[in-house]
Amino acid sequence: MTAPYSLLHLTDVHAVPEGLLHGSADPWGGLTAALDAAVASGTTFDAIILSGDNTDSGDEVSYRLLGKAVDAAAERLGARVVYAAGNHDVRGPLRAGLLGQAPTTEPYDHVVRLGGLRLVVLDTSVPGRHHGELDEAQLAWLAKQLAEPAEDGTVLVMHHPPLGGLTPGFDDPRLSPHIDLREPDRLAEVVRGSDVRLVLAGHTHSAAAGQFAGVPVWVGPGSAYAADPLSPAGLITAVPFQACTKVEITASDVRTVLVPLRQGPPVYQLPLQQLVSHLSGH
Image (cartoon, rainbow, N blue to C red; front, top):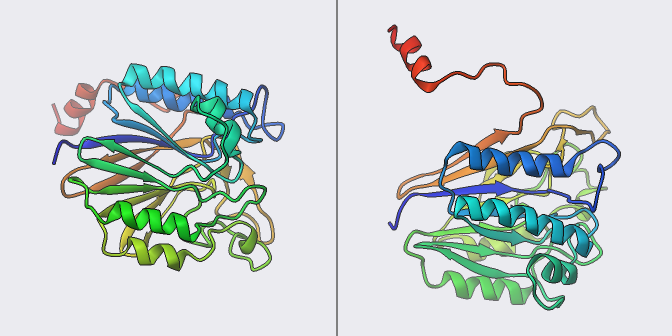
């Protein structure tokens, strides 16, 4: 193994040109808090991964502002930046405003290598819709990538999680066809038995973990706002909770740790040595 890997996973930033989202959520505050926390932690991150819904309306201005903020933090961290497309993203402006590329509209599928670790990014977005899909060409492309194992394995990055029913109401038959990843079994056929060690996703605004085709799945919390997993029956409730994820990958283990982004002053904050002395009785 080349080395242990540390990844900062953000999802559902929902950047806007200015102001608040839905009148109360602060997407820039959440993003800034996550990036500032990563820098202040002293952790050496190999990559910052944003797994879709990078902007709220897919406008080029928001993509440019987002790219500027993330690139500045990545430079301080010495980290690569990896983007996936979500249902709120628009491929042309994403490529032009965020990546400095021609505004083409084909799926944004790509591979990023971090030493021996491979990140395979799948575009599950469907232009103009909110559900996710992977067509035959994308699945064939994925199978071709996975045919050759990477030295330290593969992390699959996608916006729509391959697990359904993670948020109350999303598994309702009236809603799920319009929000979930369709036909996940087709993806499972490609992933099962491969070197994929982890699937990173977003979309639900609610942190969740599960297993898909024998592979751990981590659905990151939204950095703009959260969906309440215990919302009253018949209601979908968004709450002002913002978080991101620290991902650690070693030769034998994969760990995901939810990082709450501070909403107020800390309950306590003390030097590490003071806590060690307290717990050891010295």
